[in-house]
Image 1 (spheres, rainbow, N blue to C red):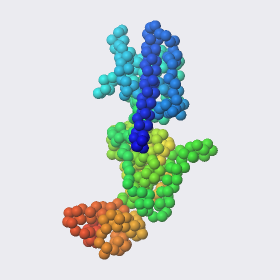
Image 2 (cartoon, rainbow, N blue to C red; image 1 turned 180 degrees about the horizontal axis):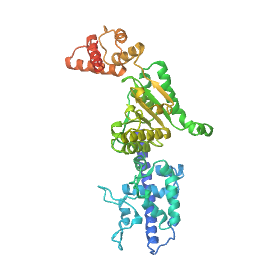
Image 3 (cartoon, rainbow, N blue to C red; image 1 turned 135 degrees about the vertical axis):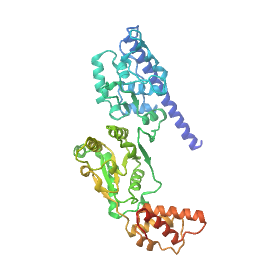
Image 4 (spheres, rainbow, N blue to C red; image 1 turned 90 degrees about the vertical axis):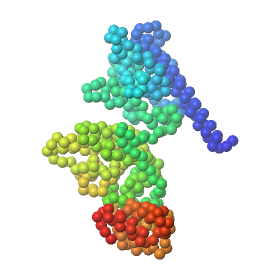
Length: 458
């Protein structure tokens, strides 16, 4: 049998097994909801409690979902919470029972909770819906369950499930019960989806086709960067070492600073690629808001999404958000300082890797320095580094005339690696437009263009 066909057949069988497992879970919660409604309205019922409804048996080898349940020791209430959050996506009609109207007041039952979406016509459960299913009108059970869900449940602590933020003053449990989109994908397809750039998640995954050996940095800079790489590889061991984790806080924070084009973004991309971690570059233009409280809210959405993930969070041009705090001479200064204070706290509490990059270290608030494990200066490349950058860019890609003296150009013109790539683009376009070979003069014209950007001339 063809190997690819066999692999595909195995994937199809795994998905089929997974759908069968989830279908059993859906049948279970359907019986649970039916039991809760009958008990609540004092209708005839074969059970005296929802916990008498038979819970489906799961075996780790039977499906992806089953394996997750067993490996994480997911409890009965948590299993019901997962399936309830999946119903709007898989079987929305099963929640129509909650549209039952209270004839006394000619409105929906408050205790059922739930909201309606803008386009989705079905019932979207809230925390209130979950509490009704699990506790009914038993106040002690309700209070006990609410505390468990908000403070103890692995699902909520790990942001697998979340209650959508409610407006100030509204009950916490009136928030919409949502499942993390990655876990929605995992439970239904067996693969974690990558979050897309959006107003709710203003971050973009970045990637590079280059390799670690393509990174051209001064020796001492590369050693400092490799220390970050070592932390990524060692971090899991720290988390499992009780004596060490008592004195070392989780997470690692690094600041990369230096002129544009010196390799900061490439370094972050390669750290992710070489260690198998996704790198998300935060779009600060989408984060920073002129409206009070919005910046914190936008930041929270990024940190909440990244919590308990193996992501690297990358804040480029970080001084736009992490600038120095000012004397509170106005209300705007006060709120700007609050934003920085909030950010400092979220950064310090984040258990993963956060990297900030800036062209001007002097613009950053001094309070950040105490929170960084490393601060790495990316200087303009020296002669040896420029020679290697020119050779990497030209010799391996477009083979310029042999009379071009790369060493002489490297010694004479102090430009960054990013600028050298721009010169390469200039040369490629010149060759495409004219059909002529690339000469030293072609390269010099490209260098002139780059220097003019900085207000310099040859």
